[in-house]
Image 1 (cartoon, one colour):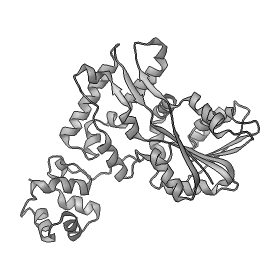
Image 2: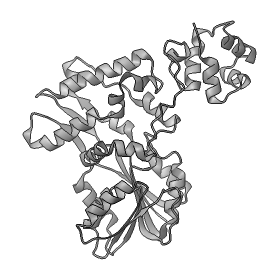
Image 3: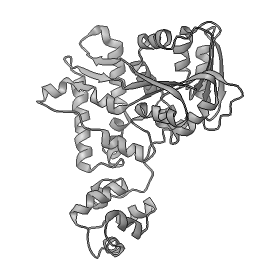
Image 4: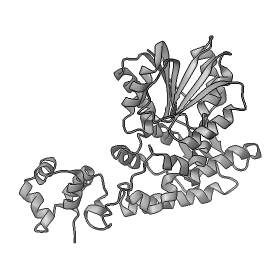
Amino acid sequence: MKLYIKELREEKGLTQKELAELMHVSFQTISKWENGVNFPDITHIPRLADIFGVSADIILGLVPLNKDDHSIKYDEIDYWNENRDVIKIWKNLYWNDDYFKFLVKDVWKFSKPIDILDFGCGYGYLGMKFMPLLPEGSSYTGIELDKGQIEEANNHFSKTSFSYHFINEDIYKYQQDKQFDLVVALFVLSYMPHPEQIVAKMKDALKPGGMILLIDANMEVEQAGYYSGLEKQENGLTRPDFIPLWEYEMTHHERDYRMGTKIPFLLKQEGFQDIQARISDQVVIYEPADSNKSNLNDMFRYAYSHEDSYRGGVNYFLNHGHSLQRANDVIEYYNRTSEYFDTEDAIAVKTSGIYFVYAAL
């Protein structure tokens, strides 16, 4: 049996001595494991899997070690271009216009014209939500690296009377030439490897007394707020725990699944005051038998079938630290759920987990 301890240790940039200290064994023991002289006790395998961020099956050679980089590059344009349609669906599915109007009118109470700067604006979605609710004379500026997204945003805004401007720039490199009353970002920080740098950039772009608004999700809240009738139908079947998958993504700098509730900490670190947060009251109820929900039902099914992990199949989970058995179990659940969603008596409840975090400078 070929153990992949040496290969995984070198990938992590650890010496035999450093790994030995983490494992509480001698470096000679590590050397014997790597050379096949001795094999680690079975009790050591979970600790090795935790250190290397892989499944036990990979360490034991039950799954071939593939050194290709399988991480998803959420902060690169290609990913967003490939998934543009499903991203729009997710936004429309989870966004609650009534709740947002309540925040703008009754919580934030913008009574005078304001200038907004939107970091990572995409196709201007947040701007189109904000501008109709603000006093006349307000303006919207968006920063976006993808020229295709800016072209789409310009097309949307050109059909309105709003004052707008788009900047084709990497948000990490952006240098403001003016300051704004409100600086915002929608679903950006959780996909950034260095979110604290973005918050610092946003702070620099604020006028004294201005407000920062960061909107992001906590997938842990979303998971806790999910229920499917399939669970009742199959006598207590429960949705798989996706937190190990999300933990793997976070430790491998793909995305931070708890960003919504981490934002107050980032704002505190940057010196913001009066930090407050709201959570969207939107709860999606998927019910294909209800013809009045046809648009919502279509969006829900599309979003479900286009999740990265569902499309990626078993290999997606193997490449994200799961054992072969665990990967197969999750895919089986996905398939059974998909079949259930196609039935007329299907029902599912899904909480958005979207946080609106705001603070003053």
